[in-house]
Amino acid sequence: MKDQYAMTDTMTKEDVTAMILSAKKQAGMTWESIAEKIGMSPVWTHSAAMGMNAFPPEKAKLMVSVMGLPQGAEALLAESPTKIWTQAVPTDPCIYRFYEIVGVYGPTLKALIQEKFGDGIMSAIDFDMSVTRVEHPKGDRVKVEMSGKYLGYNSW
Image (cartoon, rainbow, N blue to C red; front, side, top):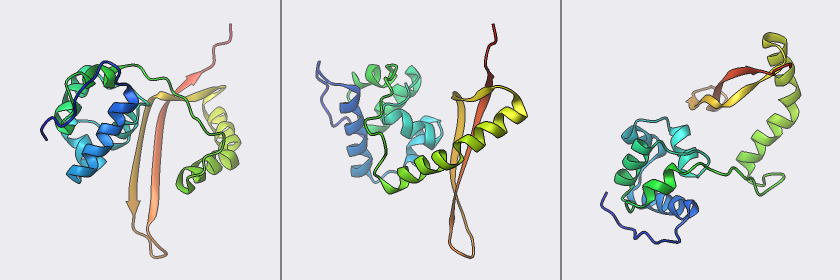
């Protein structure tokens, strides 16, 4: 994909996200195909493209090339993010279901993690996630797998 956007001094990480979404749509690409081209998982690639993670410099360079972004976008893609959610309760039905799952099963997950590992948390930094489609006679199912490093709380 050839460079199709111009970089300005006032461009933000959000502007680069908009460019990525536009380029993805125009090219008819999937997150799977983009991730494959930069050598990352689709989950991580989407999260970083949405500004929730920082691209390592070499991956930022690849993303700029794959998506036809201006060269200055590399620095913005590599910037450490500020993770801010603007809604208390998500209104998108798919995202709301995850919110509901955490609301209903969050205390259960916490209890089971602490029962198996001790007082601590699952890392969202040292973390892997995958989303797969599983055929099922009653209708295909969404399988979400999460794996995060256990981090015990310090007791000083």
